Image (cartoon, rainbow, N blue to C red; front, side, top):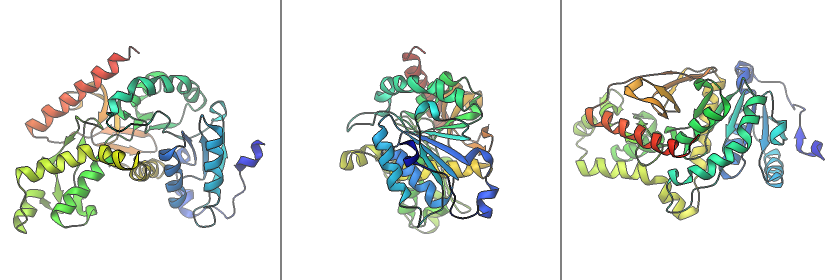
Length: 335
């Protein structure tokens, strides 16, 4: 029966791009193949991020169904060997993407999820980390900052190996909304969101730029109004985006799936890319023993270097408050 849900024969030789991939991303497990996990797997097929995908879900039939559906993409996408495995069968992976957990309900904050998802992690994470000691663990499950710290505690692995998607998605939302206001493509906007992936996150306006211009300078040059009300509206729209989407369609999964794949690509391609992933902070910006998002270099070693940038006094104070919020929630778990 298990052979029915396993494909190991490549239909063509590895491409030059695949050969350049670091071994850490060649075999990738996705733990939890609900809406986010399956969208991530689909995005990985589109970009050829992994040469082998291992799918796992507590609902075995769901995992098998996603496997079958993804198999039918292969004539149109990059080829990837795929299999469905039990939690105790996932071993030897270089990258483990964890999306497993309870979903966020309408009106529920990400932090409300924490106890339920901490219990779910406790049921499988020690085994997963023992069987994949050299893997990079990429946490997507919300509340992602707290869950990254839970995973770090349960695994006993070094901090650079256990990272969360953090505010990578919030940063994309921020850049998109600035681009819409300034009438320019999002790729030309350089801006970031730091802190919690949630209500206490910090939009870093003091460093936001379009090309060589600060956003305010750009707007002034082109006579585009940028009032205090505009800034607050954009901040609120970034912070509340998930709530608005969940209210309308029940879940968010496209953007976070694409963002997760982009992080996986950066890890596998050894890019030394700068992303606002979540990782344990020790001393940077005055933060101590908390997992949250700050600018971080990622490559095949994982999230190996934080980058401290200049913040306004209000942004720095807000970042410290965000750390306090996350510490309080984590400590309430009693781990």
